[in-house]
Structures are given as C-alpha cells and as structure tokens.
Image (cartoon, rainbow over all chains, first blue to last red; front, top):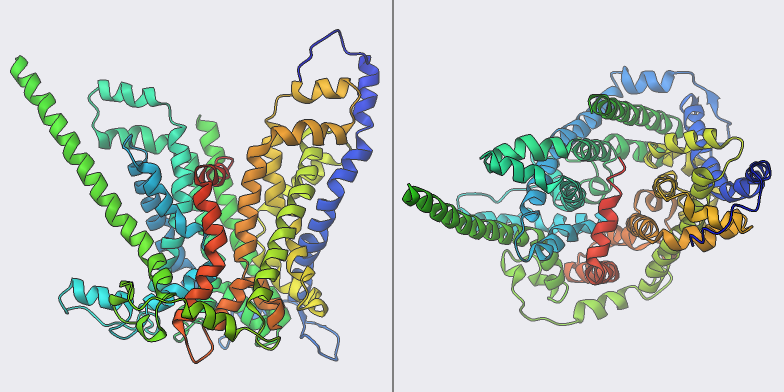
Length: 316
Length: 290
C-alpha cells in the first residue's frame, strides 16, 4: 500500500478540511454501537438506580411508589432482611478469597511448567485449556453428578478407593460446610486454563537474555523465578487477579444449577439474590438496589486495580 | 579440578533428566484431573442410565450404545417439551447475531474512535472505557423490567449483547496500534473513511477479529443468566438453559442428560481442537491490554 510517490495532492489546509469532513462518516460508523450501548447499558443502569428508590412490582396495577433509600436500609440494616444479603456477600468474599489466590497460583504454576522447552507442551496445554470452552451450565451439571452424595458418586468412590475406605462418603453439595467449597473447586477447574494462557503469553514477553544473565550469575531456578519471572509478570498478574475477583462477585450460574443457594444459605450470592428477589419475590425495587450495591463493589475493585497499575507505571 | 567440574556437569545433567521426568509425570497427573470430568460425561452419554452413577466404573466403557442419544431426541419431540433442534436453533441464532452483528457494529465504532477526528470523540471514548467495567449482571434486573413484554422472543435474547463496550475496547486498542502510513496512502488517493476502513483496516486486522469472534461466541453460547430471566417457553430456550431445566426434572436420566451435554459442546470443542493454537493465542491476547 505504501506507494510513496510524489508529495500529497492535497495542501495541508485541504487535508485539514478533509479531516473535519470525517465527522459525518465517523458519527455514522459509531452510531449503531453507541445507540446499542445507550439503550441496553446506559439507560438500564440509570433505571436500576431509579428503580432502587421505588417500590416496584411487575404486573402490579399500582404505579411504582417513591421509596427513598428504604430498600437500601432494609438490605443493609434491617434485622429481618440484612442477614441474607450479608451471607451472600460473605459467600462471594470467601469464594474470592479462595479462588483468586489458588487459581492464580495454579495458573502460574501450569504456565511456568508449560513454558519449559520440552516436547509435547502444546499437547498438555490443550487439555488444561479445554474446560474453558465448556458452558458453565453444562460444567455445573456434570460436576453435580461427580459430587453425588452416596458412595456411588464419582468423587466419593475415588476418595474411598484412594483412602482404602477411610474417607467418605460425603454429601458434598448437601452439607453446609462443603457446598461452597465444592462450587469453588469446580470453578477453578473450569477457569484456570484461561488464566494459564494469559500468563503464558505474559511469560513469552519476558526477554530470554534476562534468564541467561541470571544463569551466568549462578542464580538458581527459584531465584530466577522470584527476581525475573514475577516482576516481569506484574501487570499480567494484576490483570488476572482483578478479572477473577470481579468474576467472583458475578457468581451465579453454578449456584443456580447446583444448589439454588442452599443448603440453608451456604451458597447464596449477591447476584443469586438479585435474581431471586426480582423473579421469585417479584420485588424489582429491592433487586435493583442489590444490583446497584453489586456495581459499587465492582467499581471499588476496579479502582484499586487502576491504582496498582498506575503505581507500576510511575515506578517504571 | 577438572574432575569436580566434570562431576558437577554430570550431576546437573542427571538432575535435568530427573526434572524432566518429574515434569512429565506431573503434567500427566494434571491432564487426568482436567480430562476426567469430560471423559466421564462422554462415556456416560453412551451408557445405560443405571450405570452412570456407579462409582469409578462410570469410567468403564461397557454396554455402550447410542440409546441415550435417540432416547433424548425422542424425549424432546413436541412443542410442549421443545424439540432438541429448537434449543440448538435458539443458541445458533443468538450466538450468530451477537457475533456477526457485534463484529460489524463494534469494529466500525472502534475505527471511528481510534482513527477519525470528530467532535465528541473523546467523550464517547471515555464513556466506552467506563462501560467496560460495568458487568451485564449490574443491569440484568432493570433490563428484565424494561423488556418484560418481549419475553420468549429471539431478539430479546441477542439485542442487549450486540453492542459491546469490551469488544469496542479490544478493537480500539488494535486499531490505535496500526501504523499511520497504512491508511494515509489510501486517504491521499481520495478514499473516504468507509472505503479506507473496509479495504485497508479490516483486511489488516485479522487477529483482533479472531479474538473478538472467539470471546463473544463463547460468552453468547454459554449465556445463562439472561435466558433464565427472559425465557420460559420451551421452544425458545437456548441449550444452557434447557440442560439446567432437563437435569432438574425427575425422572433423572443421566445418560440422556450427558448425551445432551455432549451434543451441546461438540461443535465448540471441534473448532477448538482444529484451530487450537490460533484459538489459544486469540484468547490470551485479550489479557495483554489490561
């Protein structure tokens, strides 16, 4: 394309006018997506805030009534309602507190393992990544069976055999103390491959001569990992950690398929409550308030991420 | 002196060999962990219902038949249950429109934002960047309220997802990194923004189109929360919603449920296995911009 022939035919002034003439095509090009975002993202989010300040029910003969901050007061402070919300938030936090470090560490370990110049690494990578292409609803159905409670359930049968009959059987999803853990393990299985390939790409961006220099200095594998690999992956890891944290707060599909929030409230989540409040309880106002609170959490996480990334740039 | 050196290199080489064997052993164990649930589903889909939940022998390929597949297709054979082809069609329509419509609409917007000069551009760009952090979950409830009269349609299932701030952002990052000379020549030759975009920019941006295609397809194909809220009519259910309903209805026929699962994931799995290097690279590149 670079037929760098004679000087441009247009004078700079005409070129500038040409640029200004971009306005019509530019606006036309941006319009479909902009309208879509406006109609299906911006307006609904504004509506969420509005609805959260009202008492709204679907198919109700009475119009939405002004409710002020009552929905928020009930969710956050009312002894009759707050328990459920805080339990959901706690479950989200526990999920994040386990999944974020474990899944990231596992993804990092897998990526470092696969990054070694050995044969067949692409073959293994295929298997570790495979669960990522599975829809979460399907994964949840399969694992529900793996977690089946009697001694014929796959996981129970495996533990029984591996421990010579000492362990199990457990009611993985039916017991308050193991239900959330079971969902966590399954989610890590499904999600770790995605992080792994992102970290692998990050690893390949670290210059190889850094390792050569370190090897000349007699730095062992571990010291190379701490002093070259980890700093080189800093931005990638921050990205991965933040995406996983936000994903932890979006937790819904697995819960809906596997436990419906139970047993008791052991696996309820903020999003699960938003949906059931809107749907089963037909309380759109309160569900919207939960949604707005959910967004505030996500926003805080993101702002922390931006902060961390900016500090990195200033240091660099 | 040289003996110590010799011994050291010898030891290191032996260590390397042991390390390599250890690495392969570890990788093999991990592979088993990652593949076992998938293998369980695939094998179970060919086994009689009673033998699916049967401890570790669930992995044994015994008494295999296509009975679950034919049985499952027979089970979904009326408008009341929805036909299997209905679920597939819904998923295909939704994913098809979201992916294709999204590629066109979002790449055009990203081009206007990255390469054209117009009033309001910076504002629009800022709004798009802000919207990237707004997950769909945050607007699902009001959208459900807003679109309640359009339940059980195809369009309500895809419309909210065609325009995507995240896709625009991915396109934007890529277009912004293209060399200026690429389009300058075309502009000087008198080509307007439209021709420049379709004839110069699009053909030179295959990687980002691949990334957006794969990411938006996987998201649309697995979409669950929105159908849960908007679809109750069996004929309009996409595959993930139907498998969730199917597995919750007694009598539970796990062989058939697994057969459903295999058919649901098979096309995606095939595309992944055929183009996997390219597939993995595309997905991985989405993280580098962070």
